[in-house]
Image 1 (spheres, rainbow, N blue to C red):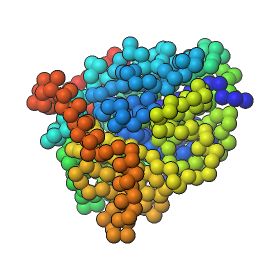
Image 2 (cartoon, rainbow, N blue to C red):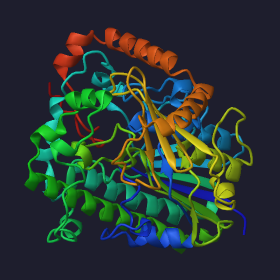
Image 3 (cartoon, one colour):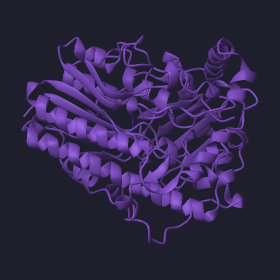
Length: 479
């Protein structure tokens, strides 16, 4: 059968290795594992920016952040640039979202015929504190990361249950009225790290290890990362006991997410159109989960920049594992290519379906960038073959050999034998963008936004609110 419909399920903050089918030693994700067994799992998938709004804007528009100017969590997508939704709408295909989008608001034309129970940025503005890039502020709201942990319910878990129920209901009532693209935005395993008790208990009594390189003496000493730590101060509030509870909660939230995905897929099967429907599961970015003393996202280590990517569809060979690197812009291109039968010429992405059917491409380079909270300067990542290159404006680069060093414990950028490889990566990066120019442009746009909202002192004094509240809840700021 041919692909007629598509369901895209996007979670939030799900690190790429925390799936059973990826080889994790104890995580329980039977529904994701089944999806991978029936389709293709991409082992080297990445966000195009490891923070919510820019990553989601790249997914929406199929274009890089430096092209669109959706720099940080105060520059939300508002439909000014065409999305994959606009492309398929022009082809007469229904486009519906349920759950978290994290765009500007629900009235902007962002390419959906209908938005059901959407989550958007606070006050149509988002986190303006993240646009303060000079003399990085200490984000005191980070304390909530270690305070809100353990078994229980949160507004996010309740929201995810509602999203799942509405998704199942939508499929029951509309699946046979296709063609359609249904986007489902689930929030787990995003903090607060409070997992429903049944899922927390899956890991409660496990003897799990502390995060890798958690000891201060083991953490990387890098100028850009050291500046980052002064802003994102989560780890100042953790002790070893809290770390382990937080990790078990994260694992519990991943299993909770998996259970919700299973319910949605079961509803698809019951609808009778599963055979002509492609399913893509991915996440907007990952989570450091305490590795190297880092929490949240916002870095280019595998934990934060790497994401799950699983595709199942009528023309995807079951049990396929694709090692060719991919990113979220490839998801946008896949939707357009498979559903609208065309992709905008200026999009850098490529159909995941075609990549899944081709041999490993060691020459394919994927790109990501970061200009948001905690970044004293712009950061840029290239992944090609076994190597990951990270360029920091004004700081030394990093280079990791992910075959020899999959845990990224040894930065080899300074070794003489890799000087030529570093130069080649610099040339590839300059073909995509001018890092210094992009950094200056991002900071100019961010300063303008800060000034328009009262100036640096007022923004820092007001503080941040941590996670965007679920619909119906209010943001709580802390300076």
